[in-house]
Image (tube, rainbow, N blue to C red; front, side, top):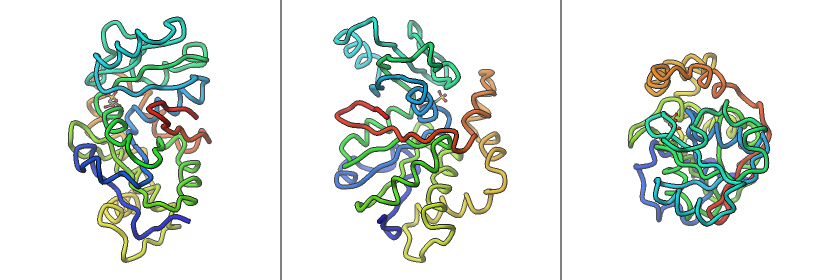
Length: 242
Ligand code: 3SL
């Protein structure tokens, strides 16, 4: 049973030292769009996803795997990386495109946050799409849990924090204990205030505005949907599977 007094929320991937996660269960959140894309890709039949930090790591891994079955995927500042097969729009990750494939996945903040948390005792991937499935798994965890908001280049991202708040809120059935960690209290408070209109909060976030400039507004609607999927991606030996 999860310990709600130690459940914590880290506001960006830059806000903590890796060593802190060693004996903890972590959940990486990048609503717009990396973790929503990971959930979608696995739901649509991708075999596995290898998160990487940069182009160099991506091409090294791509060269060492059967090239018929791999796709290079990712973005920098929201735009598909030159020469890659796919960008970071979850809507591109259809069964026809990703079914049975290994995806090498390289994004600005989301995969950086995952790589930073590889040393944790278990690592799950969360989005609004698989919110309830994540909460179900976390409720059973005995170890301390940290929800890591990927954020944007070291800064807080509202859409990540409100999902963290939704997870905290659901885990404690809307009643946070006074002993809760500060991070959990802040996320819970944000979600509690806006829980009637989460989609509008996501649409008004700085990153949504950035993405609207790239004309990917459908992605924002897509990533704002709750519980369309019951799988929880998990990282094992550097590879994410369902
Ligand atoms: O930073 C990331 O990992 C991405 O999700 C950002 S973007 O939505 O593709 O711009």
